[in-house]
Length: 430
Image (cartoon, rainbow, N blue to C red; front, side):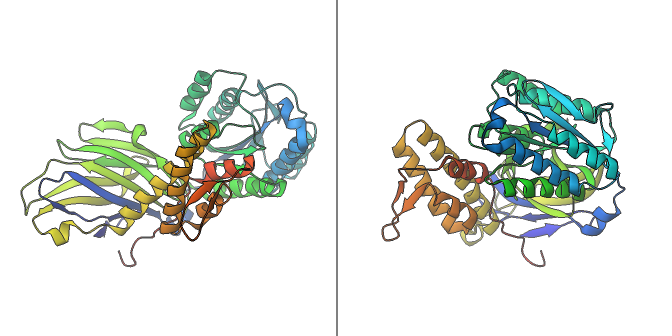
């Protein structure tokens, strides 16, 4: 079943609401859509763009710092005039290298040229302390409390010059203050560090495999940020007494577990931050545990509301109907099944790569073979292509084996991009 409430933002619920007697688990896919006319009509807020460039000693190897300069220049070239911006040099410390006399500068022809000149002066030295970089970025953002602040963080190394606890604390302190996209260059950085930053700060994390790709990525990230005009949406979930939200995950365009971000705002209501939005659609998978009712009875399992500035701008309902008709209860929602498989695919990839690093090749092979099967079944061609760089599959038997030599860049690309899903759109006319 699909339903939507006619409001400023569309909320579609896809589910099979029919449950067999005694069953208490309700699954649904929530599609939130922000129409282009709403985004265009949204008042334009002040914008701040922060470029965080790793300048640690290792960036002097293989022309990485030069590639970073070119990427930052590409970002500056597409940054609209009137946008505030800053460039932060990241080592075992953090320093604003442009502008020198203020937290941010206003983009114009003169400041664009001056900022590019400042990039040329960057040199590789010192260590890596990403939490410190985030802390300075947060200080910059807090100078503009009414602005939409976006950061791009580029690094080539491990977070070796501060504790893991410091990084975790700085990530936590930065939540809701600014958004951050992360990119890794080379093969010495930790996937987990960049993923943790990006997930908490509503950004993306990826590897740049070529200098040209890095420059294009920087420009694209700036343009994507500028396209978002709604500073924050919030998902509010009401569930009846006795019910429990087991999990809620974003499942498209990428997998992101929101369960732990819940804030209880009333005894039966919890809210989940969704970050900034442009004209786009995102899909979420919710699973709720409800008290079973007698056959023929119906319950409202959840009321899903989307809020902007505290006002409800979209709403949808998740239902539960108990039945003795097995034809009804045995139906499987196509989208629930698909996204459940996509989550399993990402988990299989990550667990397989982790097992390989630990030397457990038997588990690695089994997990990655399962990932190949899931990618092919679901039509996730991008992940299937990445898997082909780490495993060989016998087309006759379907048996997978790990490649004897795996390029570090390919392995990191597979790990980072395992959370990207193949989307199944809502039914036409839903």
